[in-house]
Amino acid sequence: MTSFRFDNGWLLLALLLIPAVMFWRRHRGRTPVLLVPYAAAWARADRGRVQEWRIIGLYAAMVLLIFAAARPQRKDERQEVVSRGYDLMLAVDLSTSMLAEDYSGPNGPINRLEAVRPVIQAFITGRPSDRIGIVLFAGRAYTLAPLTTEHGWLEKQVARLRIGLIEDGTAIGDGLGISLANLEANRGTASGVGAFVVLLTDGANTSGTLTPPQATAIARHRKIPVYTIGTGRNGMVPFPVFDASGRRTGTQQRPSSLDLDALRIISAETGGHSFGAGDAKAVSSAFAAIDAARKIETQVKTHAIVTELFAWATVPALLLLILAYPGLGGGQSKSARRVSA
Image (tube, rainbow, N blue to C red; front, side, top):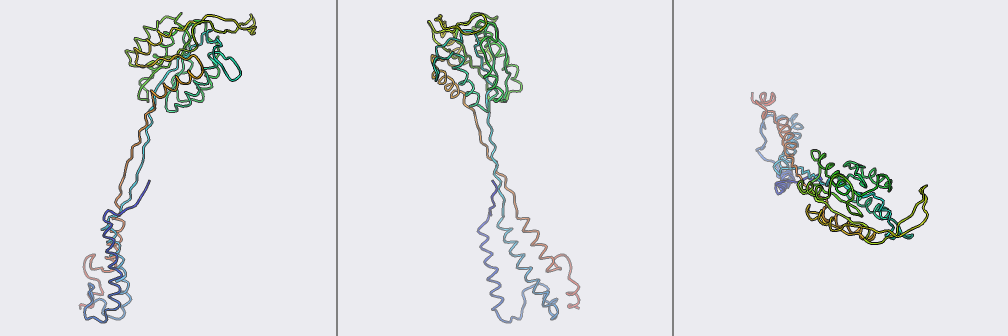
């Protein structure tokens, strides 16, 4: 934002002297003395018009000098908005148990992946200043998307997630370990103020090369909080049945085993928080709590740049005085020397 001001604005009152002097000169009558330098140069009648222009130049110079003395300034205020986001990895369980239909949707039961997918997409959309990556795990862990700010592309990848993309199992330790590796690999180019992992699973660790305690120790050493979300519930849950061709043939009850204690330990030891999400609303609440805990940090800095403008009035004023009274520029004018002679 640009604004103009006078640092010594009260000096502008001196401008009232100009019309006062003009009024006085007009009504003072004849005077034996002309209070203007080099009056002899104006003695001849043919110099009357020159004298008039010199007086006008004198008034103009006075106006400009008064403006200069008032110190006109231009003030430019610039706001610098700095949004510092986080680097975060979403570790998503794609084991077969995520097919359990213990969640309710608008049109009836839905499986766990269908329940968490829109919540994950909304979470990504709501954090535009973050770099977000996704790791998928089942029997093994893979990086679906490295840290990126291309959130539109990321949401499309989430929309394509399907159970069965990875061999079955629940490698929680590997999923967390690969997520930490992604954060460590990008530490040198990280633009955020910190990093964290969101681990979403519906079971206990049953496979992989890295155990959850080992992955937790790495996260604790690197000071990276891990937020865990346990989806579904323990006990018997409805599970779809498919034939050899992959066509669904019915539903049957199967046992569900969710190790919430292990998830709480991971979060507690790394400085995160653990959530149990037995229904779709609980999943949304869990992601909302994580979003509130790791808020985007926005700083607004205001820089004021003041530019002095008095030179724009001073220089023309001096030029007017030199043109009106050549003697000020050094020596007398020719006309003045002739009159003196």
